[in-house]
Length: 210
Image (cartoon, rainbow, N blue to C red; front, side, top):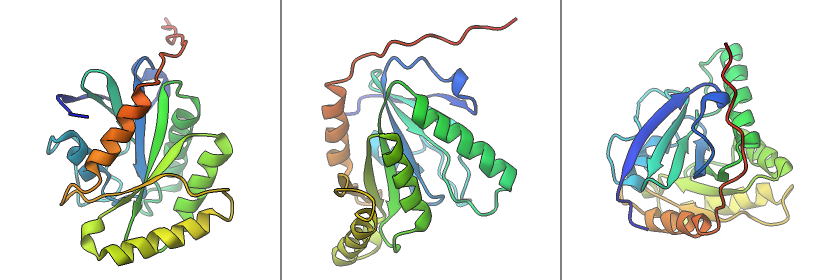
């Protein structure tokens, strides 16, 4: 797939105010500071499209980016940010989970995992939640340029072992680096293939209230 255009459409904290679910959507989510914004910018070829920050937890809204005027990348808030209050965490969790569970046009959840870390409990729990809800997801191991390919393979093997405690098989995965653009073409080809089978769902627009 060639990305010809990528533009920011909107930010929302309410699922009811999202764009109509008439185009395929791919949600990107992971622990704070996993490299999500950098990956989105790499995929789209637009540096600065998604705002990167040295402050984990910067993304606190659902951000929609329209790609090639035909499908969306959806940038979701990172989970597990320790400095957020319990009230904020509960609020984020509720609208993230509502979006993931109810969004008719969501085709796949791209779960970002730092390839340098041991399997994190919060990542495993999130994958299990997706599995329980029957939601399609793939794993995206980030920052592969920061270590040897052998160490990345070891991380993936450990993650696979952890997931196989609850899953019948390891989900599809990609190894990526925003620095070297590793994995970019593979992810775009995956999205392109899924898009071929997308059908606009039946949906009703929220009713305006007086």
